[in-house]
Image (cartoon, rainbow, N blue to C red; front, side):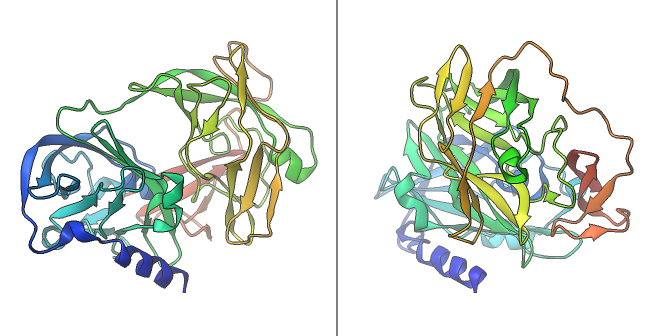
Length: 365
């Protein structure tokens, strides 16, 4: 029922941009920033060139060429376990975007011609209108941006996720994320859940090339430096790669995504999401979420949530800390993307490797 509901919602949002009587003309070469492949495979790329077209009778309606079929698309499909079907991609040669409401941009249902190589499961992209009021999909200054929870995808009957996608109109410089420093993260979640003393560890921080103070923090719970002992808890498959934080105003700091998926699945296999209710503050390069500023929501259970203890991110940390994890000597344990433990990881596909306290995605060809 869950999947059927989402599909029905997406179908309603295909919108007027695809009307048969509309005419589109190219306005030049723009850029496309992927989030779909990153969501499924954990593989990132720089933005690449695509043709952007605008409706001749309604300047708010756009369409872009299928970015995954574009000549400039950088992915090696075989290497990441994705099958590309040119004929299927030709059926969806354009992706339609309605920017009439600049704070609630809608996207058409889209099948880019991709499927999971080892299962044949077709990858589709759908628009979720339930969070439109949270400005998850916006258009400003020539940038069309969708952040969770706007676009989502399925890559099996059980696996799905929200992801970021950005379209830059012709003449707009694509955003890049530049490494700036390491930060010391002090956990207020796992220590609360396990009733233990909070631990700290180092994570990488990246800053937007377009917006100084807009940061992407490496997901602390997926970082190789994470020292937490998760025991039998599955960590990884559902986790966001980055925790995006808007620190442009030191007196009012917010996570930009409505929910941040830690990837820690502690309740019936569902991931824990962070949401923010009270602004964080920054003083002397230390961002502090006071107790109860952040909440942890256990997916699909409205009654399963708690407020976090104080959570701290010390930016540009220069001193090492004793709890940074080192490479474990334990034998690695592998899980498939459904979170099922595997006896081995020899068959081609993408797996979650857990070794000691560290988790990572690995590709077997």
